[in-house]
Image (cartoon, rainbow, N blue to C red; front, side, top):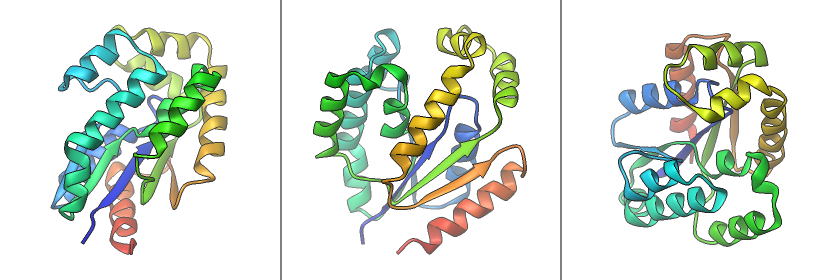
Amino acid sequence: MRGRLIAFEGVDASGKTTLAKSVCQTIESTVCVKGQGNKETVVGRFARRHPSTFVFLFELLVMYLTFVRSALKNGKTIIHDRYYYSIMAFPTALRWYNQLFFKLFQIVLPKPDLVVYTFADTDEIIRRLKALSGDNRFHEMLINDPWILDYEREIFMKMLSNAKRVMFFDTTKRSVKQLTEAVIVAIKDLK
C-alpha cells in the first residue's frame, strides 16, 4: 500500500512547523521531512547559504529521490514541513525561468494527498516573527514590509486551488492539540 504525502504550508510564523512536529510525534509510521534549507543535508546547507527558487526546488527533488519516494512505496506517511507551494509563493518565483523549473520538477514530484495550510492575521504573524530568536534577513524583511505576507498568501491560494485536498487552519483559534487531532482525523480519512 502506498503511503500518504502530507504537506504543511503557510507563510513564515503561521504555525506550520509547530503543527507538523506535533502530528509527527503523534502518528506512528511517519517520516518527518523539513523542506527548504534543511540543515541536516548538504543540499539544504547550500540552499541556506545561496537561497534561490531553483536551489530550493533542487533540494526538494533530492529529498524526494533519496528517501521520500521509497518511504511512500513502503506505506509510510510523510509529514513534509514546507513543500513546493512555499518555494513558489516567494515573489522571485514568478520569474519565467523559475516557473519553467517548477513545471519540470512537477513531472517527478508528486502532488500531496493533503495540504494543511496554516494561517494567522498579519499582526499576529509580525508579533511571532519579532519573538523568534536569531538573525533571519527574510523575517526582518517581512516585519518591515508586511505586504509580502499578503502577496505570499495570494500566491498560496492560487496554487492550492489545484491541490487534491486542502485543510485551512487558523492557528490563533485552537490549541496545537486540537489542531493536531483534526489533522490526524483528516489523514485517517484519506483513501
